[in-house]
Length: 396
Image (cartoon, rainbow, N blue to C red):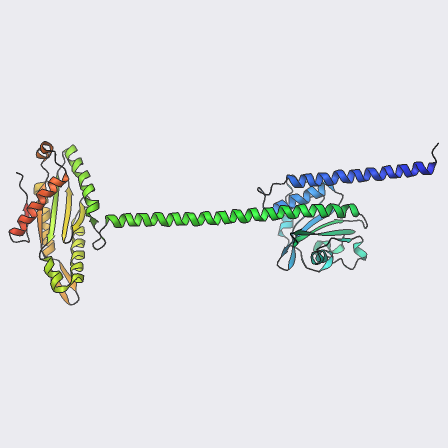
């Protein structure tokens, strides 16, 4: 029969083994919950809070908190009491968020020493330990405290604190647990920061690319506009005018609508360039183009064909109407004066007009070029007859 002393020792060993087994299960559960956190879905503050809740749920402690290094100060980013960690999502109460965060300097108190030495600090009896520096709500102090540094590649990220109201509550087991826990937490924080830095870089690069794309699109539109617009006069150029005129011509044929075209040529323009210089000639062209824009209608297609020659495609305008329109332009040109330095230059214009004959155009299979050729012949006839006049074409 075994002696009573042996039986007592056996019971004590069994009890101690049971406690260690429970501690082991709690530690494994803590690590399991910690590893299940997804750094991709959580911001740093929320990630840390969930990590502390995982620790509180599986360990016998009153409170845990995390201080992250910001410059030369350790600043409290979150903390969890036992009653708080039972909340569904572990959200911080609004009152706690409104309180200014606690701060410690590196080397200040137990936590500051953990940061300074990069080693875990175990304050077994806070009331009788000179290292403990109470602040804020914790001014009365816990019974015992462990401060463990969070290190990533030897660089300090912050300090984790766990406390209990009774002195000498924590054991070597808790120290070893926090060593492993803080190593995993440091890895998660590093990954979270790298991920968010990458996301920030990707977002910034995306914005840069979008800005570059917008600028390229704007430049493309500008160059397209420049390719269709005469830079000097602001009127459409021949490249734009001809396709638009052909479209208007086809529409007029299909719906048997009137359509006319005018070709306008400034008289003696070469003499202006020769006598007063090309700058004066440019002023005359710009002033004449501005007059054409004022006198034309929105439905008209107006452009510069090249040099001193301009064209107007007058939609919904028959032969009689286009002659009146052209005469009005001749009169407006005579009234136009262009100031160049101290000079006042006057201009006149010769205009050839042609109106669409639907029957002839359909019979001969005309395109807009044919109608334009008729107006061109009329223009040269106006020049032969003495300029400063309107001549209408006659169909053969």
